[in-house]
Length: 345
Image (cartoon, rainbow, N blue to C red; front, side, top):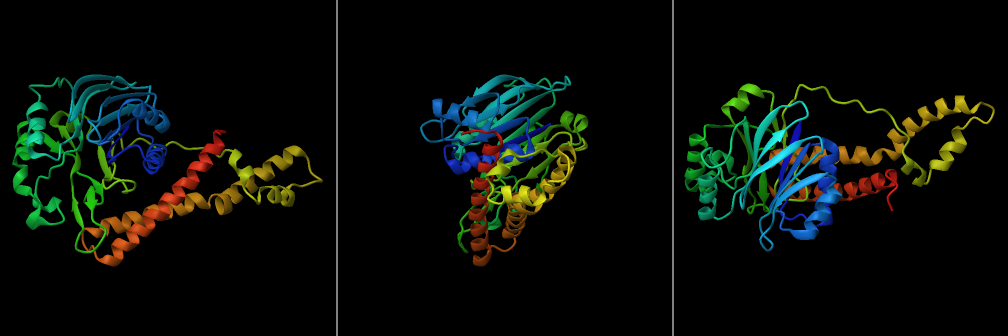
């Protein structure tokens, strides 16, 4: 069972939709949550359809600010208990019967409005009958180490956030990956970073779902990185069988591959096995280079982003910007590949 929460800073751009579809395909979350979508109405509905989930619920954006979207697969039963401008609170029932409460948060950048969040999201005011998970962009930090500038982090303005965590007896689930979930400034001297996004849980969550793992994913298409929450990290990964890809026929060397490897003096059945092996090698070495380049770029980008909070000099920032642009191009190429496989126009 996986969840992704992401401050996408606007969900209308093609670049965001492309990145969102890739994150969903790569990690296969059962629940996909977006905050600060800045989109509402029918336009929001069409974007939810494009991302590919069967069901969704939303707190609409006000003008071009705010917005919380929760999308989930049809195998889950989700009952929305509270809609609030800064959070959505729900009960989740899995096919196995396991039940838990989940709150998706988007803390306002305004300190005064954010204080209303801490007052409203409490056990006394929302229905919490099961282990409780709270995740999203809180727009607050708990100590100066969670900022790239400890001497000017605004840490003193986050006392209400820390008091709320203490009062509600919540536990920070920690994280793997880059230190900061939000970064801004692409030149030396202007860089800022902070851990504004996180996952918290109740004590009974820790007792019952101790295998929960939080990962800060690679930052693309937004100044915030997505947060992956995996509830069952010990479950074995699914194995995917090899399949013929219809999009192969669009490659310029596809017909030559068949002409050079089809054995004219052999039977169709023997050729079938031989060509299957040939296609696997060709996919890995030629057609599959899109995936290889994408994964290589993601690894490089993740490594750079891990280093930026240690040394954000101009060369590293420039390289990060260059790789992000290359990654956007590769994701576009991959999107074309999957459209061809699905036979979409």
